[in-house]
Image 1 (spheres, helix red, strand yellow):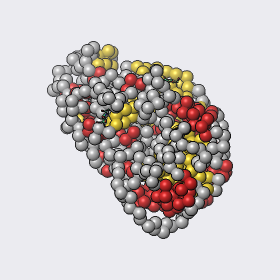
Image 2 (image 1 turned 180 degrees about the vertical axis):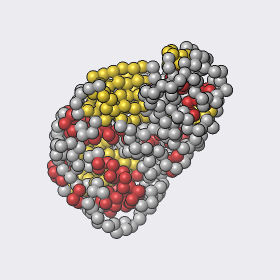
Image 3 (image 1 turned 90 degrees about the vertical axis):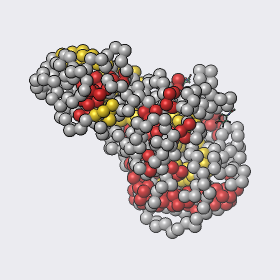
Image 4 (image 1 turned 45 degrees about the horizontal axis):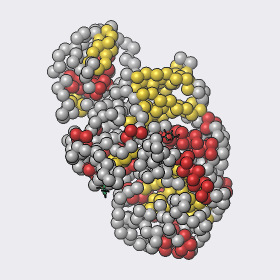
Length: 612
Ligand SMILES: *[C@@H]1O[C@H](CO)[C@@H](O)[C@H](O)[C@H]1NC(C)=O
Ligand SMILES: *[C@@H]1O[C@H](CO)[C@@H](O)[C@H](O)[C@H]1NC(C)=O
């Protein structure tokens, strides 16, 4: 959760236009199957889908329209309501006003989720109730069983009757209270926040201490009993790295990997009464499924979120949301658009970034077991895999190439997941049906052994086929990127897409075996000059893998970093873009020729080269 504190300004609520798009409340069905309407599900208090939205990170928004794209995108995916997480920042009420207004304008629902990192359960019951009252009659306020809905993060010990009394209404209250730490007598249900396997003490699990998400479900369900509503968590990921660059506040991961896919399968099988996706926009903890381009400030997260869109996580969730709402355990019925969603970390977990990630170069836990420097606690629980989910209407063949690793799979209809060991270099994906490539592409993000921005980054890159929309961080979201970094090669600007990836196969129209005319490198001429395939030379840095693979394809295969593996008729390289590439500062001179050639032909991997 965010650490942006401030004083609460009790603003009077300005009159909000009551322009609710009431007619659009029924969700768009993502398939031909009709999905049950929100009215029907909310009246029954069953099969509701929420997504946690951090108000604390969007203090830079200036109007209700700044929320419109979030509301529209979430609604289109089938999310019923945003849980608006609020602290006590000075802008909280202003932003709540905008959010409620935008939700009304876009046919979405919202409710407040009080963050008890900032509210005090012992003394703030009336304050909480009064804030609920301010929004209770807004058209966008979510009502369940005809009652105003509210939730929380933490808050055990809160006097719920005092909250209802101050709210002036019989609030349907589903806080993040914990089994055994509060009575269930005054609440309507409870939110379980722990969407990740843990050690039971807010760190990654170990074989000896492994509290799984399913164990959390069981614990909540048994505590709540049959009369109360269990609000179950779903999250794609967790990694955070507020190390020395960002006030030493937190630095750990929970195991991610196939989590989102597996959890959705579990959720549609279990059929919990309500679910909450954690989160839309908590970039700092890397569990966002909303866009990077959604307007927000930078609490330090840009160091690991820049160029790392997660929009495919929402695409993956969309058919599951529809199946869940209909009580259907077969997601295959809800695949409307054939798609591939893939994700992986940009480095392998063995990469050592200690030299530039810490001031002192040590990463040992202190007595409380917290690491505040260097590699995040729990890193060993991450697998070096490329995860690929196919959403298909009929069977096909999936082929994945991760650096030097290639595998093909039979992908059945419906939603299925495949993993391939992550390899340094380019990441390519092909779906073939009946001899035709129906989806294919190369990721904009290579896996490298460069510590981007000099830090450990365990946030995944998420891509899709067909490719999703361009989703760069905006200026506000990049404002503290360089603060505290120990390298100077990291720029506060998006760079995805400025390094266009290369065609999966060379153009089918080979020309002569002449070395590429536009080669301007200072490296020795390639030998042989009729090279058509190559890879990184034995003993050389894996960071050359993508560069060698690209350049050797087109006859330029400098010995030293690269080795040619096949010769033949050299295909024409992609056209020159008229620009020259240089190695990143600090990279060896052996990169000069490779960067020059590759960048000039449109492949300028950000971990190694830049345009100069
Ligand atoms: C925790 O248990 C789950 C379920 O059995 C298992 O998949 C996972 O690998 C375990 N994690 C650790 C760190 O042992
Ligand atoms: C561990 O380090 C953190 C951050 O510096 C500090 O707040 C905490 O008190 C330390 N714990 C112990 C037991 O030293």
